[in-house]
Image 1 (cartoon, rainbow, N blue to C red):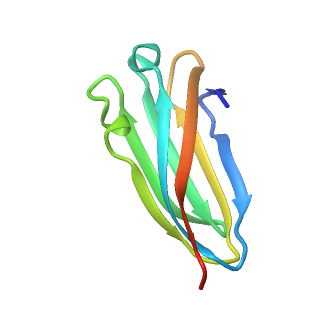
Image 2 (cartoon, helix red, strand yellow):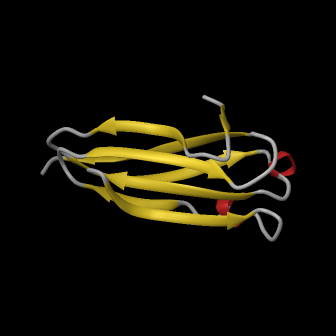
Length: 104
């Protein structure tokens, strides 16, 4: 699903895990030319605790597309992933999560 990412945090993923744990890759996607000079951030929380807060300056590089984030998510966890951009018009972004489920 393509979502408009604004200056405030936009929730891209919000889910709970079961009794298994997950090893996942999280990747943001968007059209680099459309992102332009924006500074983007990705914020990952598990059970309300910040696990990752990453910032990219799209005017300097497109490394956000080259550096997927790998996470181990424990059983019975509430996971939220948000994206935000610092300035300019809203940006059309996607976020994918792929991985494997392991029985504990």
